Length: 148
Image (cartoon, rainbow, N blue to C red; front, side, top):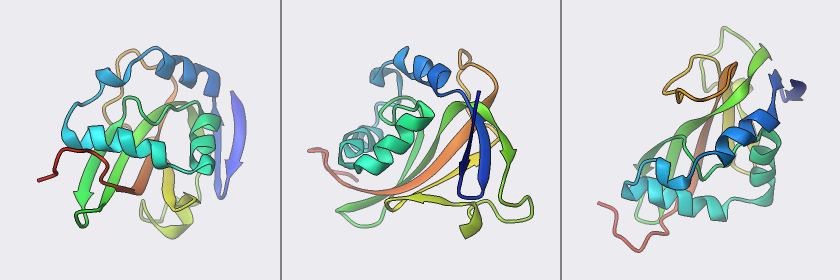
């Protein structure tokens, strides 16, 4: 495990084990709905800073996670969701704040992140210990298929 500090968070992570898991699965193993396919395409538009953030944690953003889409207008779509990573939370900004309070947010080039140990939908073969990286990002509609 490697201890890192990101803004007000201190976490222990194992990016190598996390990467091994993501390397062991394919994009096709995730959801195949139009919104998830657009999210995966949208990952190609993420900045190098955001991609480096994911890489530092061992996460491949195009692979298995939970993505929820909220259409803001025809061109902009808000995605929220999470990925799992091998690790544990050592210190969080505060236990008394609401989940998406500004002090809990790590912002990397307009993408908002936070960690959570209240886990959802952890794959059976995911290594332990596990925490979630939750995110919120605005992406363009890139799919040739029309949404809604």
